[in-house]
Figure (cartoon, rainbow, N blue to C red):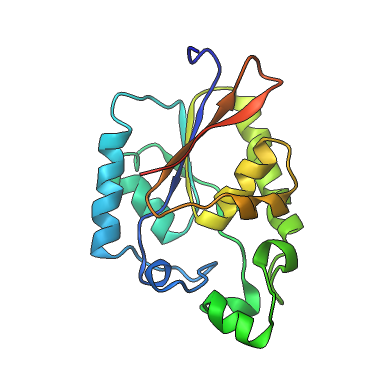
Length: 193
């Protein structure tokens, strides 16, 4: 199929110290590691030949730096709604640490005390999707794993909790688009390295 309909390329930020250690990084403004910086530069090669009418980024240092190192800093517009899940009391903790105190916990189902629930993240994702659909052009979005997983679930009409089924690696590229027409949103590619 030709690309007659807009495509939205999603880029998860490059590696940080906390993404490497598995610590939940919501609003803590972590820089990229040297490996993360190199991977962000590599995103430029993987997007070579593509053009985007707009580039949006989470305001986090890790996402915005990824956009800059990938060569899109001049175009990149920071959007607060693209911020990662607010982990509240679980900020900086690993899933293993959380499970030790709260067996069976799952962020997509249970949310975070003093932070966000999946529905809260879903509302932000819906606002981003509304903007993407109104623009109706090829766009590039830089953000974080859990937010982008919710965004993809909402793009195809699933509840935000279903983002649990979609895993994203650092510096990965995914593509949202349409199948036959604008009434059929789909995930065209996912977690490409």
